[in-house]
Image (cartoon, rainbow, N blue to C red; front, side, top):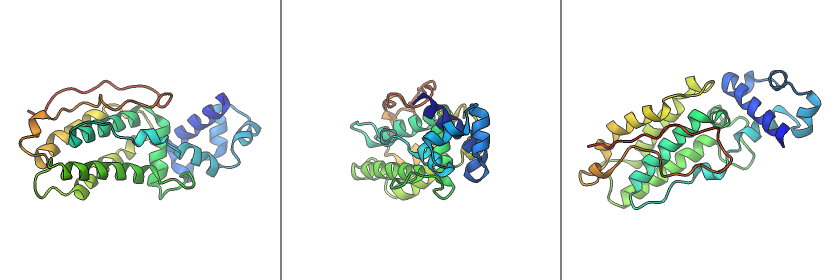
Length: 213
């Protein structure tokens, strides 16, 4: 299992830098300093290896529970940005997903599709709960948030330092446009409510704090 994890980790680094088409098993082997026999003992092909990288644990897309849907959405999105900043495998998964699903695990929705679905579901819940102002369209707001996540592409090849802070800035300007006046002062910009799955990710970025008021 240790060798398999090393292969997946190294492959993720190369996928982040070069994309699926630009990645070769030769480069992965050179960086991991493993033999080709060791690679093919665990993976039959580059496609199978990409599928392993793209197979993000389902727990990553589980939002936190709470009485305020918008707060749960803020917390979830910031934590996801935090994970992207600290986990090269997660970044590689998103890049593979963005490349028209190349390398995504069979039978599983791409990372991008899963993220879009959970953001939309939470915004629709906020709308049903009366937390959104009239005219705030959950589909359009989801598109704004997905634009942020897909635009981290230039940073895929390295740790995306400050990513949570950039997302918090986006929320600081976006929330006054979508949240009701009654709810807005209660919302906080911090990612501290969604626990990270055990054994997943490479670290934890500093939490944000502060309110919108």
